[in-house]
Image 1: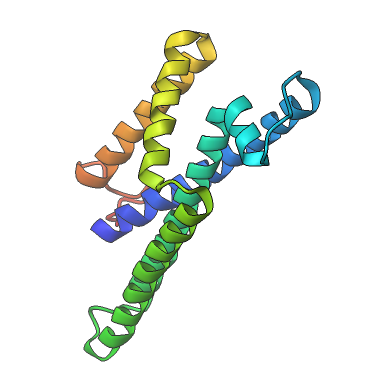
Image 2: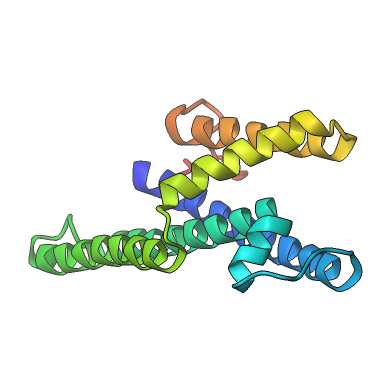
Length: 177
């Protein structure tokens, strides 16, 4: 039951983070093509960090988060679908799948840290600082709605994972996972 809840949260997270990246990249490309900015920098990443810091950080971080969610979605699905830890004859296969997912997780984190020369956690902290500073600087309606919706999704996602209620039934009355 707990793994099914994690699976659902990770599935929705991977989808929304990927959608966020698609929208942010599209908008940033439009800004790159249309807006006035100083293109002079020693690297493209330096220019993006200077001119489009929030966009660069959010796409970098959410790409990593989406990939990590995908790794664990597939891992949980394989473990549950093939009953790898409940069936004694399949436990070694379950351990193989679990160790592979852990290895992929830490390998992805290491590769990303080497590529960006910063850890994922530092990137997340910088993204949060930038998000709240942008919110304080410009209290537009869109940013308020975006921030409140994000906080609501985090709250209800955690509530879905950890709080079970009497409403955990399917439409036909059968028990929901």
